[in-house]
Length: 271
Image (cartoon, rainbow, N blue to C red):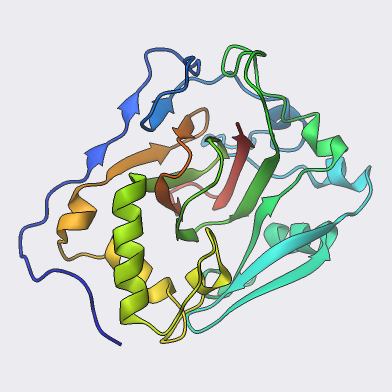
């Protein structure tokens, strides 16, 4: 496998996503990413993601809330250093994993990715009009739930995306549509993977037949690369939202913190 990073020794700090002056998505939608802070709390933060009793006030799953409802089958991503699998399991199985993870969970991670919330969850995730006025057309939405570290490789979406952080911290790196196209061509030239999909499974697979290792090195690696230096980065904590315009390439990492819990929860609304 060929390495595709530059040999330049100087690493420029990636620039930061512009921050909005108020937690309201502007109309018309901007052409570049926008970070919105101080988003009013969603009902989920009282019903199934309450703060802990300790001084850190980190978010904890309220399992009794889920026990009162049906047990849907959910899509899970199982990732190790050498493999990637997609599977389905009852939500209760995944919640048990989160409540009592094995000691090596970070090397055998399970991630609930792009899960369309059932009605009993969706009613707790109603976005405030102060963030997203009713005039905006709303498409589908998804929950992203796991224990940090989590990762979603470089990809782009066919719709505008509003990503709201409910628990934990995420880092997002983004590039304009034309720059992402060029780097994907470089990655596919360096590997044997090939796909025209916006978000194909090959982006998650390690080794010479997948793109994950090359994408991770290019986006997050320690070496410098002119393409990486042209991106923008946002750090999402509880109460912040990131607007990602249609077609912008982005990679996402759930970050381990000093808190007692590595729980990492996001909700996104397609626009």
